[in-house]
Image (cartoon, rainbow, N blue to C red; front, side, top):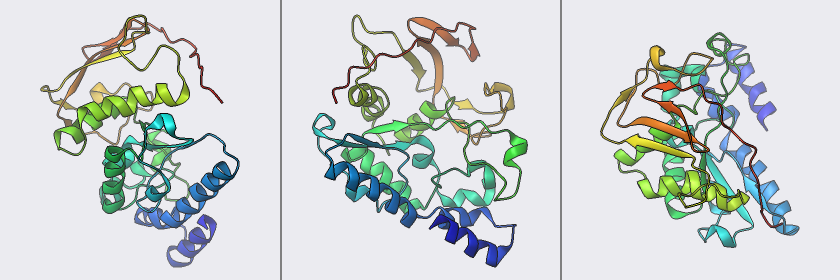
Length: 263
């Protein structure tokens, strides 16, 4: 389906396909075909399935609103699909080219609603730090993906500030749910005896993204020039401070995760 859409775009535009065509090339129908096929297989064989990177309203009907502990099939949405819609291709171009594509405003709103209703169990990020030079290519040569991990949580807090998500829901979908669904041992909650993976946020301190405060090695961000409503003050990994007051501390404290998910 995608190859056929690419051929159609080439017939109309040649090799200089406008970025506004991306959600029609990587279409909602192709997304539905893919997720429906996987879900059908999992359902027929009673397999556990976690569906990543959902982007469309038409896919949401495939997922239930029940408690995640009762689900065999769970679902996930990425931060950038909750934030951007296709209107931003006009000013951002290939900087927001990703697969699956960012789609319509109606699709974005449906994803927000599905997070709130429990159809979408996890909010994640897909960090793809291609260089600015790579992303400056025309449609077919520009790689898909964008750097996100530094600003993902602030993006969600902005959505909360706009009244689109609740803060408690953000905590649940980014921390509790991944630990529960994948059986991550002693993480995802603030509990005695658990690993201290913590973020301290000042919800009343705005933060403007510019080239001087980017920590990505690719040195660009789709959020440059945007002022978030909140700031990240401190980050701890395994009980050690790794980020404070806008700078990395240099401590590398990551550990291999343990899992106890029943099959």
